[in-house]
Length: 458
Image (spheres, rainbow, N blue to C red):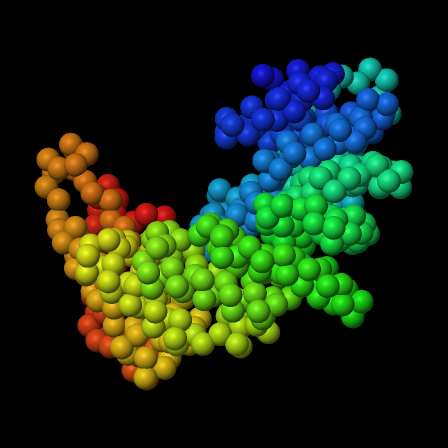
């Protein structure tokens, strides 16, 4: 569907078009811009048909479109050097302007003339010309930054409607969760809106109107940074999180693995992690590790959440015995690996080393026994990488019978860093041999012809 057909659509049609655009995954920025622009027109210009039900439907639909994620990934790729100047639209624009300026006239009169010509070309002065007709060259492509601008404006207008509904006491305990989730995902909630959301949620927490699933939504989606802004907010954080914690503790023995991990993650990101709840969640999850009741993914997820908790500035992290927890993790790794039930690629092995580093295990020479099962897996993984790195025949190359190597150059550099840093004074053993092996693998990759470099998964 062309961009021009979005104009004049009803809200139902526009939301359907947004869902279709998200499903297609290759939708242009122009199309997204037109969709957001049309939703904004409906919110602003058609208030008689855009009440609370329509606003909630808009929020639910926008939950699945997250332009900020795209912008963050593009910025990270640019900062890390994975987008070249030739691929970067911003750099292209800068290079084009620099090139244009290099050929501009140097005298003031000709500079003014050039400026007037540029103004006419860019449509700045069209109002001075009676018979002005825009041409195709004027239609510019929208960028992610154009989308973010209208996205932010749209949420500001949606918030105004929500405030009006709240003023009329017209938002109930279920609807406020839709508002919380929608604004949390967008990152566009003001502190005033968050305060009003809490005013609705808190009394309903006290009266027991929320299910465990609701509590997951509340604790996972509420922007916890609000609590850190003043002593008054800190007092509210204690009451808010303690209230949720008291409800959870009554049901925790019935939790599934997913629910345990969900609440552990939520409170790890929160301003207050009640010690009693932390202890109960950790004991439950460690018990499942020792009984081998977690899947590989659940085990890796738990360790990642734990590592983020202890690597941050969270006061609760100091009460965790990392050595004991990592000992249980190593026992699990050893048992599963010996049974052939824990097949890890190189990236996952590096991820586990990162977890152990955050727990202070790599730098502690007394922890060699804890780290040994992980080192055994690393040695097996390196042996497999070496085996897959044998030269290929021309026949294999052209028949497409090549095998992808599960080795990422960035992960290899990370592993080299660990062994160079902790190999001499930490718990890591055989450091020189590991460093030599990884460097050899990297050199083999660098020495291959371009058509054979199919081993790295980026």
